[in-house]
Each structure stands twice: as C-alpha cells, then as structure tokens.
Length: 301
Image (cartoon, rainbow, N blue to C red; front, top):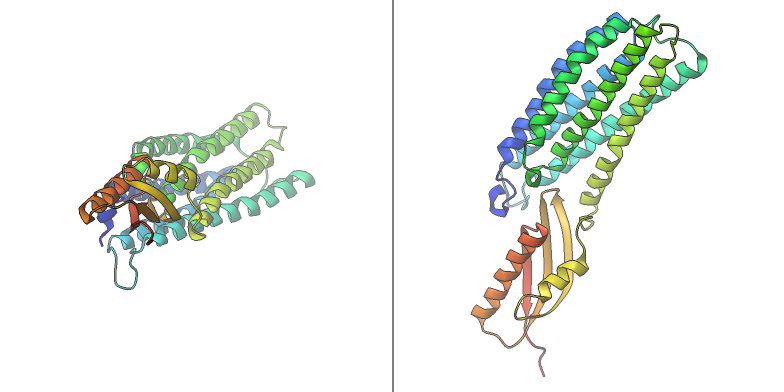
C-alpha cells in the first residue's frame, strides 16, 4: 500500500515546497527583526522576532514528517508515517501557544509596572523592520494559498494560518511604530502591541490543537456525520442497510471508513458493484479515500 494509493499524495511536492518556503521566509524575517529589535529596543518587535524561532523548528519538523511519509506503508506501519504529520502540527501549535503565553505575561508585567523593556523605543527601526517583514509574509501567503485546499495537510494549514496571523502581527508593529514616531510620549503603545501579538499567537494555536486532538482521538471529522454518510449509502441501488459505521482520520487528508452493508439476494458480481459504487460515492461526496465495506446478505431463515 503506497502513499498515492489513496489519492492524498497527488500534490505532495507542492506541500513540501510550501513548507520549505515557510522555513526560508522565517529565517529571513528572523534576521531582519532580530536586528530591528536590538536597534529599536522594542518589546513588540522582540516578541515577533523570537516567535520565528519555534516557527522554523516546527516547519522543519512538518517538512521532515511528510518526507518520512513518502516511504509509504510497511508491515509494521500499515498506514505509513502519515500520523507523524499530525504530531508535527500539534508540536507547531504547542510552540506557538507557549511563545504567546510567555511573552503575553511579560508584556502585561511591563504594561502594569509602567516601565520599558530595554530603554526608549526607536520607532524608526521598528518601521524599518516591519515594512520588509510585511512584504515577505504577504508574498509567502500568496504562494501558499495557491496550493489546492484538498491537499493541505494539518501542518501546512498551520503554516498558512501562521502567515495570515503574522500579517496581522506585522500591521500591529507598523501601527505601534507610527504612533511612537508621531507621539514619542505614548511609550505604553509598545507593550500594548506586544500583548496584542501574544494574544494573536495564542488564538491561532487553539484550533490547531483541537484539530490535532481530533485526529489522535479518532473523532469523526467535524465536517462529516454518520447520519449523512448512512443516508447517502442507502441511496445506492441494492443497499438495504448500513450499520457498524466507523469514521476516523489517520491524518487530516486521509479519512477512513469501515461499515457493514446489508444487501438482498444478489450475486457476487452484483455485490462487488454495490461496494464499488459505495466507495466512489464516499470519495466524491465526503472525501473519504479509504473505505471498506463488509457485505451481509439476508439473514438466515
């Protein structure tokens, strides 16, 4: 059983290129913002610069997880390494959540105590770092959004969500820099911006944690329901009943289904045709690319 036998790997190379692009962009932004943070003494810019570090580690882990899944299934791992992609997405979310919580606490302390992070903030350097960062993040988001949605794994969706929320973060930096440039006396705007950035990081991590938890606990995907699947299956000619339905995700792009299907007095060929029609309908209507049906004939008299 190979990766591509279920249809989920058709654009895997696009996903890998997208993740590697995210790594390169994050490295470039890290260099720009680190220099800007040192020269500007800005807490908000420091928060954004530091949060690139766990991003880079998480993106590399996601990239490595997909490369590992290319090996396909083995006698010991019959679904291959697909579940590693979910672990990578969860690790990504945990790193972002920890970064947001830590710096959010620090920003709140500086704000309540009325002090500064590292002396007077130089808004010119804040803007000098924020403008190219905005351009790089915007370009990266446009490229990644061009990847078809049907092939975006949990970890790639986390990257896209990262870049989208990072654009909001960069706008916060631009606003803080402009306010300080026009009104240097409003020093509290920097820790407020840092607190807002930390809140964005926490907010973006929560749905990724939920999605990863759903996969690990084998919850039915939130866009599916057993009732809808059963109703669709009963619309296939020859199907009289569907029961013992189990639906779960190996990873965000590989949804599996097993069920018992009751048929009437039919031949083996007719039963095979019913199963083929069921599998096709499950894939076309629900995106379930790996379905197994156990055929049951009429109950014995």
